[in-house]
Amino acid sequence: MKLTKFTHACVRLEKDGKVLLIDPGSFSEDAAFEKADAILVTHEHQDHLDVDRVAALDVPVYTNAGVAAQLTALGERVHVVEGGQSFEAAGFSVSAYGKDHAVILPEWGVPCENIGFLVDDAVYHPGDSFTQPDRAVHTNLVPISGPWFALPPAVEYARSIKSQQTVGIHDALLSPIGQSMFSRFLNADDRPYLGLAPGESTEID
Image (cartoon, rainbow, N blue to C red):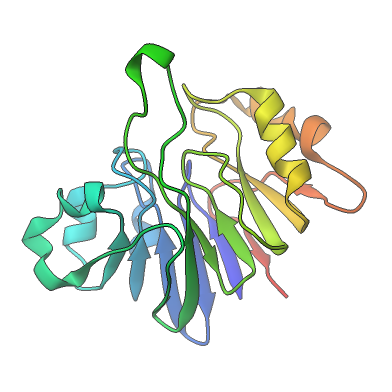
């Protein structure tokens, strides 16, 4: 399986001629959408969901009820899933985790629903949360910026999930200098950290 990172939180997975797109938002390059066979959306915020470009693709979308409410025009193409459920999307096996977006400010409460996705028991995307999967993974995608972000829980999240590598996501708010700092915090001898630039890829064994 090939993983390609696009701007911010968008990730494209390719396997056996099929393409699974995760969190294509308003910052995502058009190339991310090309030949997608299915889409996973963790939550409704525009940096993870570009409604118009998702609607333009005639492919199934798997997401939570909050996102589905914004995609009613897509009809039966939208499949509502919850944490604890497993399903298949474009030949990829997917398990969903969690329910809530991370808190931004306590007085705001939980901003919206959020589900993490584990694909082929190999790649885990938490969306805007530090919800952990219940098993080891090959590649753990680690958010590294955002209004809800804090460094200590991000480091604890990365350390708590047994993985072969971590990849930084949710990074559009950082300067190149800021992005380069995260290897210091997240890299480990048994769990190397990859700071992929948009369009860069890594192979998942």
